[in-house]
Length: 536
Image 1 (tube, one colour):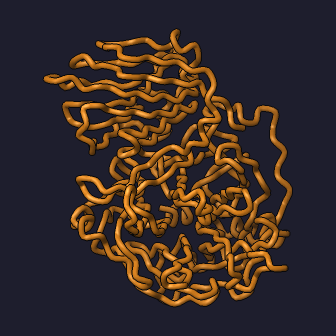
Image 2: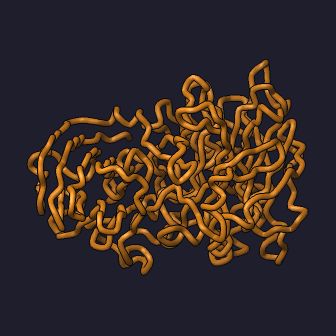
Image 3: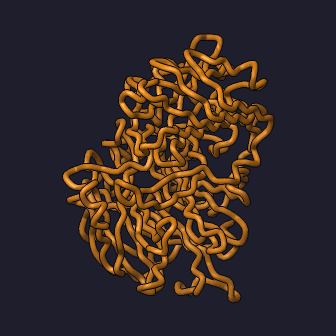
């Protein structure tokens, strides 16, 4: 999809302008915010979004000296996809973000596509200064002139380094460090991790319909280790943005390796989505866990998120072992309509930061996804219901005492014997626009329904049908954890076993909220709601 957008978008004149931009210094002043900054229609208030213009994939996420770095695919001159740069922001708590100047500009080797960053603690690269480890960024460069000439080797992997906590970057003179000698058109999105067992840096990146694994002692000299994926998982589109990392299975000392792999198109509910694989890595090859292989054979996929708007997500590198979490963030959009959504000053946002947990379930090894605990700092006024039976609708608007546009809710609903209810939360406005998220016991599916949630005429792929996700748990208690932020909802169901992320665009912000139940009564064991504060 990105290649198609490139072909449609660029002209020789535009690319020449991009090259001229690259001649400037790597750091430019941040733009001044406008008077209406962060109050624009549909602008999320506690999700990260670019200061202005276009954003897509999160890149280079790394933790160093008290800061979480977030780089991202960014075009600073328009609110649609264009010549890619790396935008940059930092946070000390994953909630409040500070915009920094653009980190990486295009150069003579090409545009700056997606990638990763690591702390080179042992200075294997030799880029460190005065005993301090450097930050090293690994990214794809895309040479437009090569693509226009009909070549297939126009993408390759390059590196840059920083010795001042990521504020300025120097590109390595020996770039590219992984040239595209195999002439694979989609050859991109490197993610790097240090493997302590094999004492090497391991790079995984996408190669059209599979991933390639490469190894290096110093981040500069790389050798091909192996390939994975042609015979497993979904293949409805191009593979992108992989991430390979070790995890400990919850409640055990067992180690597994997890491979995240974004796919566009071909996701569970259409368009862009992220599948994953669980297995082992022996220093050369990634092999599937025997209990997981059957889940992804014959074109089947296991999805990280069943919503339409969580794509290209990867995890933070170098989170301290004292923390121990595997932290994730995705791009909250979908290539089916990302360039068309009705925002102007900026386009796109990230998902909430999330913790991934590897569990051994009845279905085999599975990832659970939870909102990070740091988000609790946003909580304001609270409201609680305990042990209440609901039939039809329970209007919560007046009870909550705050608007439905920025709310966190946790519900535990007991499924009654002998009935198959459909229940959930509906948020709406005076115009009659409504978004629903809930659970249908008859089909044993969670769902997200934005078909009546506001503006949708910008794309015939945006609000076509209700999005669904099969329930995994067999518990009689359904747990819903919801975050509403102006124009998005994130559902973490059954303690993160099922996740759905969807955006929507109401004409005016949603102000009303109700709990509904049809096809039978349900018992609300507990409902907690919090008004959420702005993070920016």
